[in-house]
Length: 262
Image (cartoon, rainbow, N blue to C red; front, side):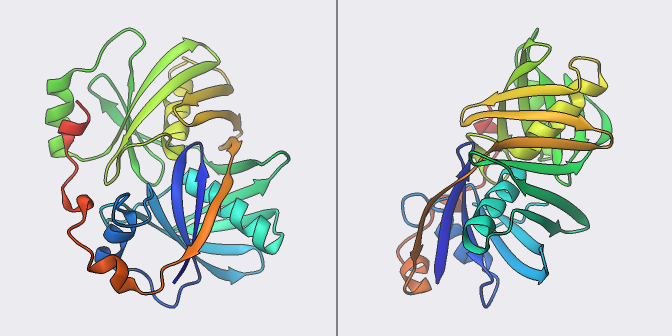
């Protein structure tokens, strides 16, 4: 089985290019284990549909499916540009279509629909970018552990804390369900930008700093333009899936819980 390792903003992915079969939960867990497998935040499976249109499926470390991954979409764009020379592609996941454009100096733009506001959450806002995000503004407050514990137990979501340095720049830290804390989260960037913009806490442009690097956000009518870099880490082969499946219990078998947020 051939695989490709890519990263965007430190968010790392293993990409499978048109595999014969989709991976099952057990294989995803083993591949995702950073000690016993390859290691990744998400596993991406891409398949060609027509011309510059591709579908992709997203799997978390624990084997669960994810509805969206925008840093993953950027990494797919980098892969297809390097492999096939495609600079402009459309990615379909579920009922969503994302536009990915390769720019200069490894910058890649992702265009996605403006996120859907769902409801006011304790200490913040709930937005949907295909997957659910709870955005908490930590500029003038700290995490309320009891509130997060109670809400997360009832509704496991991606939880993000933002700190506003000034109107055009924030820092962002995200806990992704099914993965844990990550260097970056693309859909959390989009949800955070929308939450702050809708509440008059930022303008039409925003720079978001995460552990893995900085991203540039811009509102374009009903779209969000999300620019950052992506790079190819390495490619390789697993000669036999049994090498992964039977080398021991996966560290990803444990259930991520709210305790890791605290």
